[in-house]
Each structure stands twice: as structure tokens, then as C-alpha cells.
Amino acid sequence: MVFPLRHKRVFVAGHRGMVGSAVLRRLQDEDCRILTADIDLRDQAQTHDWLAHHKPDGIILAAARVGGIAANSTAPADFLYDNLMIESNVIHGAFQAGVRRLLFLGSSCIYPREAAQPITEEALLSGPLEPTNEWYAVAKIAGIKMCQAYRAQHGCDFIAAMPCNLYGPGDTYDAHRSHVIPALIMKMVQAKAEQAGAITLWGTGKPLREFLYVDDLADALVFLLQHYNGAQQINVGSGTELSIAALAKEIAAVVGYDGEILFDTAQPDGTPRKLMDSTRLYQMGWTPHTPLREGLEKAYAWYLESQDGIKDAA
View 1 (spheres, rainbow, N blue to C red):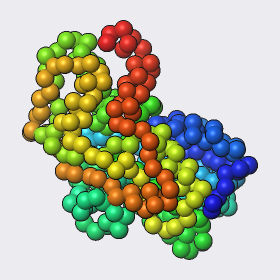
View 2: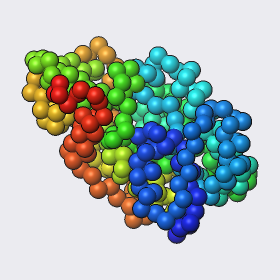
View 3: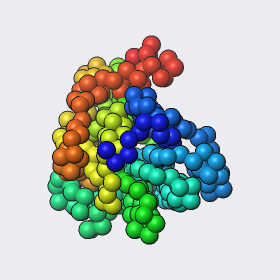
View 4: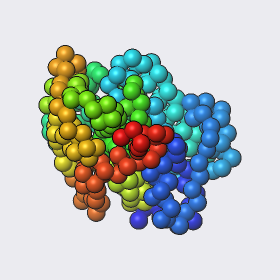
């Protein structure tokens, strides 16, 4: 074990987000002290001062501005600036504060749009990015390279993990910022409540996607923090994929919506296929354990419990 967590002080950056809150749940099983900070990580002085004062032993950097195709398309400057500031401040501040271990959380969108499938870690920077989320991807690539640079120049044990599409408790349910699973859950809950005979979704429904339940990711991140120490980013995926059309049918079954599902082919699809090759992680001894249907049921239950009045309306 490279970095045993026993008695360590572990800072979870972005603890209020979906991934950060899942990491908090997972760390409850470890004999460590969990640190969180209610500060603006885009502010260099705040971030560096906090790290210098609290001096964590390890950091899981899950803080980020995230969103779907619509959000990335309408706010490219925000996605680039906010994510560059967060990762720059935390990574450089961690170096200055003598933090022993840092895990940076990236995204599968760092890989080229036309990368060979399944996507290996070596595909990074081998081709053009998907235009609908390139601003977020560029920022995340910069975070990976920062970890590698601080490792090369200063000997920092900073690592990076690249998850596939995530979902679960704590996800963003917002008409303008949601990713595909929460967006579909919201749309179908509303259609069910209104007894709508059909719903229309963006694109053709043909793109293939891989999904991982967020608590499985949190388990993988804690595993990597303890066991992995290398410059190359590590893919974290479920190993299975399905089309957006098939996903919509799964969510309709979970929600109990029996209307027709239509597709607006004038809207963008995004990357045609995105399946991660997680062989390296699996060979280390970690595998996911939440099937898609079970994860969708948990995500739907959390949504109902977290939204005032939604349960009655449904």
C-alpha cells in the first residue's frame, strides 16, 4: 500500500458535489480524519492560506464546474476559467503546503472524439477533442499535466483518475446544467405527472455511453489514493456501454413512464461512442459492483426524496 489512510488527514475538495459527497461517504469506512473547506477554490489566496494552515496529508480534488452539452456550449469561458483556477490553486497550494498525496479527478472527455474504442490512457492528446465540451476537456487535460509536471520537477506524488459518465445521489438536476441521466429522469418524471403521451430527446439516440454509479467511483478513488503512484492518468469505468435510446428505455422503466420516446435529430449527439479501457485499474484489484438498473433506481429514489413536492406529483 503506497499511502495507508490510517490516521491521515484527507482533504476532500468539492465535498458538496456529487463525487465529493460520495467520497465523504466512502471515507467514513477508513480510519482517517476527513477535512472539508467552505471556501472559493478559484481564489488563490483563500485556497493557499487554507492549505498552509490545515496541512492535509492527502487531497482528493473533486471540485469542478460541470455540466452537459448545453452548458458547455453557452458558457465556454466559465468552464475553462473556473476549472483552470480550481486545479491550479489546489495543486500548487498542495505543493507549497507539503501535501504528500493528491488525486486529481478528470473526465473521459479528455480523450479525442475519434479515439479507438475502448479508449486507453495512451489516447490522450492523440487527436481532436469533441467540440461540444472541448473547453471543459482542455481544463481537465491541464490538470493532468500539472500533476505530471509537479511530479517531474518537484517529486510530488500527485496522480490523476479519469472516470466515465457518472450518476447517482447528489447529481445536478437543472434544465440547463444536467448530464444525460438526471436530465432524462427529470423529463420523464414531468411527463409522467402531466400524463404526456410522448417526450422528445436531443439527437438520434444512437451514441453509445458508459455509466458508473458515483459510489463505485468514490470507492475507486480511495483505492487509487492508497495503492497507485504513477505519472499516467488511470481510467475508471464500468466496462459496459449502451445507447442513449436504450438508456432512455431503462430510465422510463424505473420512473414508470410508458409514453413514446422521440428524438430530435436536428440537435447534436456529441461523441458517437465513448467506452473507457479500465484494464489497468482492474488489474490492480478493483472492480465496480453496482449494476445500471440498481444504480438508476437509487438515483431516482434520491431525486424524489430531494425535490420538494416531486414525490406527490409523480
